[in-house]
Amino acid sequence: MNTDSRAVRVRFAPSPTGMLHVGGARTAIYNWAFARAQGGTFILRIEDTDPERSTEENTQIILRAMRWLGLDWDEGPETGGEYGPYFQTQRMDTYQEALEKLIAEGKAYPCFCTKEELDAKRQAAGESYAGYDRSCRAIDPEEAQRRIDAGEAHTWRLKVPEDHPDIEFDDAVYGHVSFPAAVMDDMVLARSDGSPTYNFAVVCDDANMGITHVIRGDDHLSNTPRQILVYEALGYPVPTFAHLSMILGADGKKLSKRHGATSVEEYERQGYLSDCMVNFLALLGWSLDGETTIIDRETLCREFSLDRVTKKDAVFDTQKLDWMNGQYIQAMGSTSFVEAARPWLDEVGAGDSDIDLERAYPLVAERLERLDQVGEKLAYLFWGPNVQFDEKSVAKVLQKEGARADEALKSLREVLADEGMPWECDPLQEACRALAEPLDMKVKNLFQPLRVAVCGNMVSPPLFESIELMERSDVLARIDAALAIACG
Ligand code: GLU
Image (cartoon, rainbow, N blue to C red; front, side, top):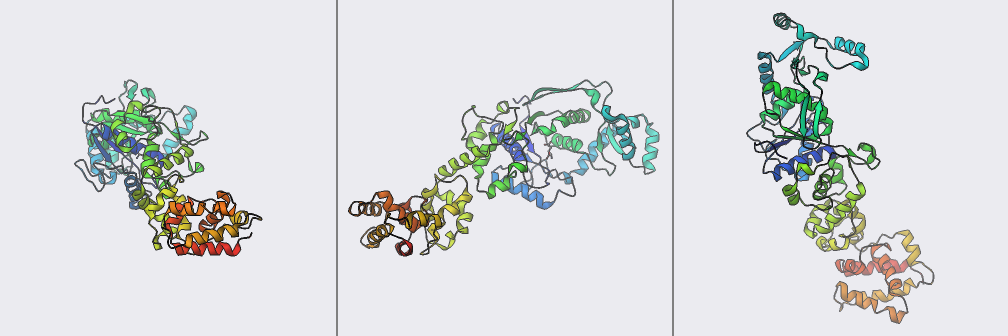
């Protein structure tokens, strides 16, 4: 879909006003993947013109989220690049220069209307309000200059050519789009304090940075005709636009806080893997072939194309995300698992234990949807000799009348206490299983009390695989604790 003969240059241009939301993250992923697939350049530009909300801290939040997602930028903050600076607040001279060019060419004019006057015009026009009435366009240039020299407050507006045809463009996602020129008022380029408006600054930046494709949320679709007018006025080539549809929650409403986590950071905190997030978000509007769901970064970066991006709204399906994250956890391998799950494992005491965490991975690899579930699942491994019993399990298994939990545990204890027995899953399990016949118990009834004794709960990861990771003395101490409360 690249009709531009220039080398592909795309940008992600967040306004640092808080967390990086999933919608923004998806935009970033598409830009990144498109640049990679096209052998182009991915630029990160910080649109920090809102002085109250654009703080250094908020910028760092965005950079951190981008790094966590693994979206490396070729040019931008900290990386630098030939087209910098990459913060809008540091590019003010370029907007001024562009404005002066437009003024000199008679393509921009000062507007002295006050906010009150504009509000009154808007009110008077009511429903039929179609933007600025262009009244200041009629002011004689010499008089306008006199008023400016006298210090009268003014903005600068774009002088949209009177006979401008409808503004049309081929959006790479939306297809052919047309906006009637008649509804384009003379938009403000620079406010009375000299600061550029978004629509002006963004065009100056995209043009000066050689951006070939503008891939962004469709909340900007209605800004595009205005921006095209600015490109035309400045004599710059108009890039290809690709507007991305909205992300909806499962209820069909625009994704918001009500649906749960909306920022990348929150997903990270809940134990979603960055590879999974990139895969999942990439599929919110793009597909490889309409069916493949697990798509790694390399494939995404090789195969991503704008012509497979749909304009249909995407639905954020948390269940699918959970499933996908589980798949990624299963596939990640023990070393990455331990590294990624470390914070949650440490919360339940893994840091003070000698247990080989890489060997604990197979116990839970297929049982997790999120890494933040790992603490609860594996805590028992780190209790040492002190088992923490789940009350329900005690009542249902250890103290169940006629189940002979005490008998089972005594015999199992003897087997496990035998120093001659290798402390390994299979031989231990076999030796314990052999007790079923002489005790005349079902294997399940024999093992359930041991599970509660060792793991504290009748539901746990595989029992003998767990025992093998623990100290023999700890296992025996836990059986003793269970025996003290078990009934016949
Ligand atoms: N700073 C704008 C935003 O965060 C980006 C606009 C654009 O991509 O053109 O919505």
